[in-house]
Image 1: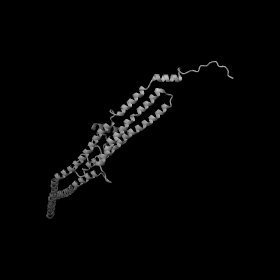
Image 2: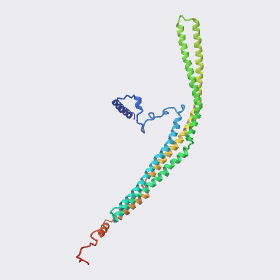
Image 3: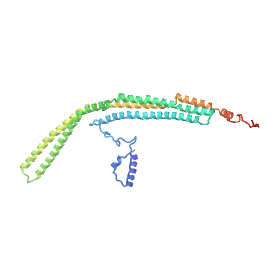
Image 4: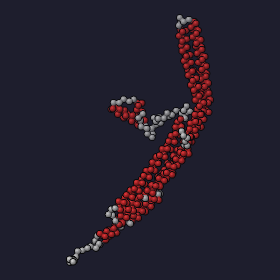
Amino acid sequence: MAAKFSNIAQRLRNIIDVLGQGHDENEMQCIFPQGQTTPERILSNPWYDKGFCEPNQYKAAIDRCKGGYDSCDLFINIFSDRAKIERDYISELEKWSATSIKEISQTKEFGTNKKAWIDAIRASKEIANTHSDIVQRLQENVIDKMANFKKENYGKSILHVKKIKEFERDFEQVQKSWIKLLDKINRAKKEYQDAHRQFKKAETAEKIIESDRGAEEEQKTKVKLSVGTYKKECEALKNKYQQFIEEMKNSRPNYENSMKEVLDRTHTFERKRLAQFKALFTALDQSLVIDKDTHLKEMSDAFKKAINSHDIEKDIQWWNSHFGSDTNTAWPSFEELKD
């Protein structure tokens, strides 16, 4: 896959060079094709490859739930379009049948050929019944079932899907105290590291003034006191920082378990959706299978009946008796002038 992207990028660079446009490597990334097998790291995904327990990383799970809701909608729309194709086909087939029979009726055809032709048109229209059944199965066994599943599992309030909002609130509640602790750790870290930098500067100043032969003892004493003050402050802030780290370590197991508990509930929610999709894919297959459709046999029987009724010699004889050699020809005979 990497080699494929590399080749695509190289071709694009060649095109850009020909056009005289300059783009750097990072700009090329945004025009990589995003296909079914595109790696997650290339797709637009701000949560990819980060620790789930980090602040706001739970939004990846929320986003998955929202994506599931959207996929249910898409599923319904796609197969509603599929059913519409069937309905349109049925409608067009009926129009074609009516128009064809009318046109055949207006020709000079007659006898068994005309009847067989019209019967064949009527028989071929019977396939509409098969497609009507397909529409019914698609609607009842696929589309309606997904619509019911969505209604039962993705019930909405005015603003949001209730179940997804429930997950989001639970994640936020679990992270609330954890984020406060992380804020304390970050502040303590900054305070400690700032103080440590000041302490290092004070030590450097002390070394400089100690090496300065012209420095007064009072100056040296002040610098030493300053170093001592910074050292004490640094140690106090270090202890505070370490205490928060220890508090975090002690809180971590309970926090992780709580996050995992909510996450597992989103997994269960997603499993249910995926199971529904799998079941409906099977239902879709069964809805479109027509090898056991009774209408096909009826249509075939109607075709056979139409074909069997076709009698070439009968049509020739009928025509011959009405227009051909079997008709009574009015031969001319001598006639006197009548007064």
